[in-house]
Amino acid sequence: MSEPIIDLQSDHYFMGEALRQAVRAADAEETPVGAVVVREGRIIARAFNQVETLRDATAHAEMLALTQAEEAVGDWRLTDCTLYVTKEPCPMCAGAAVHVRLARVVYGVSDPKAGAAGTAMNLLQFPTMNHRCDVTGGVREPECRALLQTFFAGRREENQKAAAKNRKNENGAPGSPSSAGDV
Image (cartoon, rainbow, N blue to C red):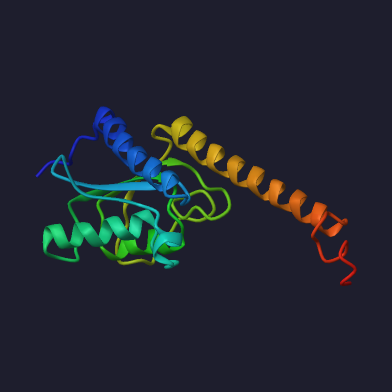
């Protein structure tokens, strides 16, 4: 059997579907990361980050999508599947990708701090692991990066406003403990 041909147009399309999931994450005030799992040219799983919603540190888009894909396939082995994710997988998600034996991982934007698909480390192709995934990075990278940057800029702005409000209350704003003589 010959090796599958990597169709960059398909990568573009499927990353677009992962981006749609990332937008859903942002709408839910989650870090905007989305993922889809593709088998034989069809999406079999879709997910977005739900760490805050589910109060579960493992509820990354990749982990949720892999669980859905296992259910769709009826097996924990996903040897003929590709994971598309908008941000380079972290060590937890990369480890899961290896354990389910994904054929390929395609990501949008690199993560220089914790990317485990080759940027900070490469768990997907670690020499002593029992499986290695093919990796393609940088697919629709500008769009994936912009989504994350916009989200975190908004978070920084919210935090700055909250800090300014707290400083105002601490400096004797009406109704604060220091202005009421309670301190």
